[in-house]
Structure formats: structure tokens, C-alpha cells
Image (cartoon, rainbow, N blue to C red):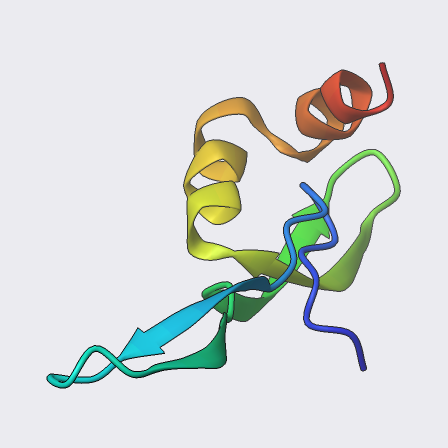
Length: 73
């Protein structure tokens, strides 16, 4: 299962761990993904999405339909 937000498409980023001796090793910054059940009134059913915490805040503000419409552009 991919670590990717289903609403915004945000995925892992890469960077470095930097030690006190300034040694650098590669690491991944994973997105803050959460599973959430959302009620779709127009379809009268629940769906489960895997989205970042930031996307869920936007979802609360705008709604699922408006968010999908905006992302389809």
C-alpha cells in the first residue's frame, strides 16, 4: 500500500540524517497519513480515505465534493 495521500497526492520526501560529526546518511520524511471514514450525502454511503492531516483540515473546511472538483483541474 503506497504512502500517498488520496486527496492531494503528497508522498514521501527524501533528505539526510546529519550526525553531530556531520556525517550524512539518507532518510525519508513520511507524510502524516490518517485513515478517515467520510459520509457522502449525494451517494448516501461511507467511504474510507487515506489522507494527510492537512488534507483532512481542508476537507472539513471545503467538503469532499469541492475538494475533488478543485483537484481535478
